[in-house]
Amino acid sequence: MTALLRYRTDLLLRSQRWLAPLLLYAVFLAVGVRAGEPVLGALGWTAATLLPVAAWVVRICLGQEPPAARGVVAAAAGRERAHLAAVLAAMACVTLVGVVAVLGVTAVSDLRRVVLIEAGAAGLLAMAICVLTGAAVGVLTTRPLVRSRGWSLAALVLGSLLALVTTGSPAQYAVTGLVSGSRTATVAMPWLALAGALTLAAAAVAVSTKATARME
Image (cartoon, rainbow, N blue to C red; front, side, top):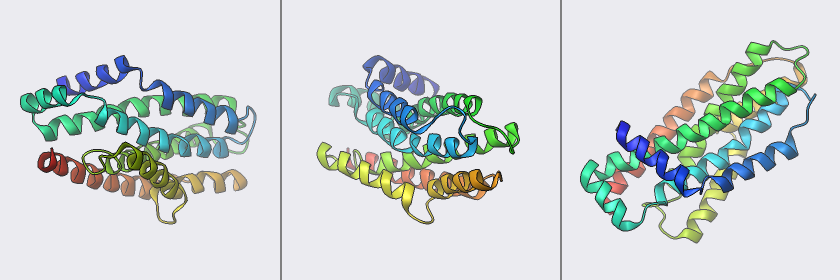
């Protein structure tokens, strides 16, 4: 699995397809985050806007190989392992970007009335929740479950939006908690939402992985 992860990560970085979602995220941060604003609200925006980026990067990793190369990798390592490695590589890359973003936003935001470590920890948890939820959206809206590129993109955008606004969504819960805490200077750790996001992501990846073994 380690070799597969290295291969998937190297393939993503060499393809430069990561550049578009990264630039989109940078635009989101530039528009939505201002130096000196309350840290919890800024972290809520930072985490929320990472969700569609995570879904997009997962979609890229699952569809970037030509059919011939995909067949070779599947024959050497198995379709399920190759599929899982692509998802994990995407999540690892997005998580790294998210950590850097959370630390940077925390450093330039207003920390009055909140504890630095608590705010940073809550931001990192919300970021992880949004990455996991975005990964679930990404694997459910691309091959092998959705093969049409147009429908895949439309489903990804709609799924990302619903994940952020639907009551009961782990991402919605975590982001709302940060925004609400910004008004009251109360830091709440979204552990329950993290458990829900882990369950959601695991179920989505399992469904997608099994579908890969049967449909490709």
